[in-house]
Image (tube, rainbow, N blue to C red; front, side, top):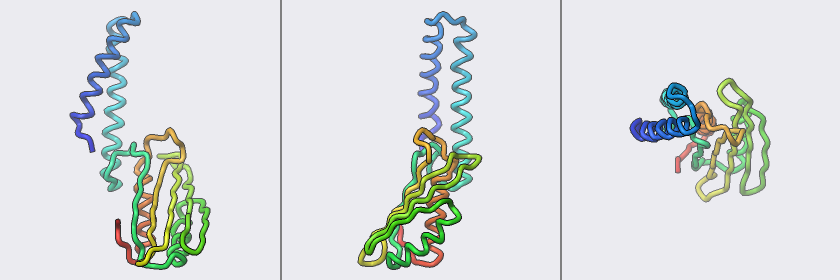
Length: 172
């Protein structure tokens, strides 16, 4: 996580540039100072809110992380893992699933909430000698969405917890 000093220095440079551009554009001093200070205030508020939400949700990153992924080894067959995963994924949202003998893929589309426009959770599993390797990735549904409200981390944690309720899991 970046330190506060690393975030404030670029913001201060941005204010100096914005004031200079405002003065060159013919704005008076008051307007040239108020606009960048308002932007800095908004930016600071977003950093504080995202930091507090990341601490509350247990996420190890700020909220504007674009995706969250986890790889684990589940000590079960591909068929058993896929069957449990479709049960676990049901409460998260709409589920689409494909499977063959050695691998499976499950795509979950979570609904829109008050914090996000929804997420796409992709779970892929492949057969290994000691179990099933499962890769879980959660991304915002909208490409330009930079704030996820901690939902990507929560989606991956829910899948991991659901699989861990019945099978032994080794994190990779």
